[in-house]
Image (tube, rainbow, N blue to C red):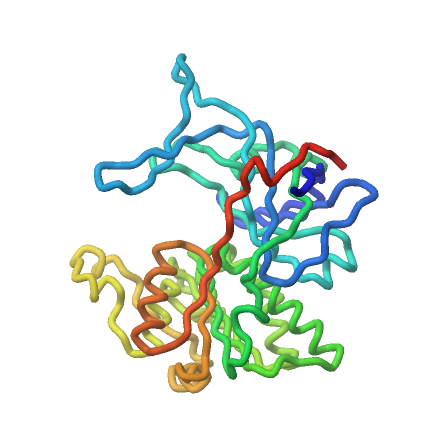
Length: 328
């Protein structure tokens, strides 16, 4: 059973109205547990708008506002797990944990869950965030990528978080004379350039050349400068399909409206498709993905179609039995 402690927001960087990167300072006089890049921790606040899980006519789960007898959305505690985007060496050096988070909005546009509370804070820096004093998860390179010559990471939206931690840690270890034995390719897609997060830092790591690393950033809502900025175009799953000369998901699904609306995937000028394919021999490669569930499901379809090992991030929900109320 893990203790629940109280930390605080140390820094907040707003990337868009719905995306932000923030750092959490642990309880005064304490340090967070040691961890590996790719793991996650549970955060909590007690003033969240509550939602309830319901099933629709097809049996699919949906989350709707939990209303009281007056029709007002109830408030209460919410605990939710988030991938850590800071590398272990950064936390050891600076003491904080970093997170890349999205403002969660329900299907009826009713705000809920933990991030709605974080985004509504004013000011944010110095505000309290509880956390479970345990870091968990096996979405780590030693567990998911051991023995492979090539590792392909595909992150959608905030799914870049565990991969940012991994790449930064690998670069740090390479700078100490211990580069990884595999080549690494990271494909990250988000709507706009400003929402890519870690873009400049990942470009710098690639340029430093301390290990065999290729970074492929992509935007699904490109503006005219996207090509000038060296960005790919298209959603992550369709960019991956393009790399393996497969039809768009929308084409495979046969949805005329979706086909018309889809952004056609285009690799950046510096990266011919043959160069990318040359790094991704299916028999000796593993694909790791994190992010939007629908995108991850299609990315698995691509991996299965080409015969590449597929791994995705999952985590166990935090239960009341996992917690004690000791505070730091």
